[in-house]
Image (tube, rainbow, N blue to C red; front, side, top):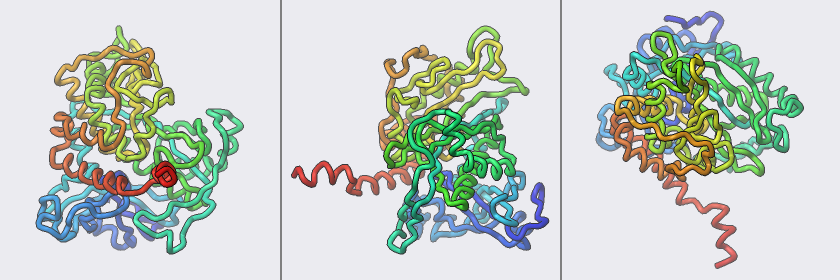
Amino acid sequence: MGGVKLDGLKAVRFSFADQHGVLRGKTLAVAEVPAALERGVTVTSTLLLKDTSHRTVFPAFTPGGGVGMAEMQGAADLLMMADPSTFRVLPWAPETGWVLCELAFQDGKPVPFCTRRILRTALEKLKPFELRCGLEIEFHVFRIADPNLRPTDAGQPGTPPGVELLTTGYQYLTENRYDQIDPVIQILQKELSLLNLPLRSFEVEFGPSQVEITLGVLPGLAAADAMVLFRSAVKQIARRHGYHATFMCRPKLPNVMSSGWHLHQSLARDGRNAFVSEAEDLSPVGKGWLAGLLAHARGACALSTPTINGYKRYRPYTLAPDRVIWGKENRGALVRVIGGPGDPGTRLENRVGEPAANPYLYLASQIYSGLDGMASKLPLPPSAETPYEARADPLPRTLEEALHALRADEALKKGLGETFVDYYCRIKEAEIARFNSEVSEWEHREYFELF
């Protein structure tokens, strides 16, 4: 059973990351686990056909299940195949283990919509290089004032909890403000450390009730696994203690700031950082990778910023990017170059992502962008000293615009596969259609009295 240790456990959660990077799965009694590790655990294939409201977007009961695959017709079962190396004991859930899975059809063939498999395929294509990633994750933690559990609050989606701030005002990295949130940080730190995640720092961010936690350098697949486990763990731990943690980019609450996910990345070859140059800030490999990130930034946005809400973060002079530009040690740029000649820590920090992104797709988008930059020898545009004033292509202003850019990006379509891109865009377009059909508070305020 590999690294799976069942002593003292009563149950094990088998989970996979769905198309949104949300963990789904089943919990098995411990007596059933050995057989499940060998043969897999069944889940309905419609889990891959849902948008963020959990509505099934594709006609699952038509021929091909709406996606042209007979194996998914009629909500047929798929198999969750566990990766024993991911096994953990969950410190907040008594006598409960957890293992991460990938999806296969009943005949053993891989499911093309399994996002963890998509990243593994990208990493194979990257060889002989290995992707190394460090994670900076911003999020909010609120105290739950009203869980909104009345029957009228049920729905698709349901009413989110009513919350209170842990702190007020903007006090970035002040010790007094950190001490106010430290009781909650202590809870998270204690439980997360038992998951063997490479925790580096715990910071009070700029906005009220906003936190940043950073993770140390990990290989590509391990970094994506860590991100899905981290997000799910933070939400579960917080909720058990009466708090609501959210990785939504920009909650609709007064005075709340946007949250980002900054992805530090470099390539290693034979154990050495391939971005390091003894004479310049970046090696030719690093320059090619950076050029690729910039050339495909607009198309990759649909994967790094996959929610309608996330595009409200791209504002000038806000420490978030708004255009496709890079800069040396400049936090206003889309990609920040960190390090210098001979510095073994030389890396690129992509500041485009939102913390709700599916990490497998976000990292895969970086790989296919960077590979094209190196293979096509794309020219590297000049850096920007003033990134919010530089002449450069704007980032997409909406998710709809980002999806159009993804559909038009040949390198990303080739890497991810046109079948997957069409599937993914259709799910996100269903979310956009629901959003556009809703009457917003802004519309009511703007037009109800005027006309």
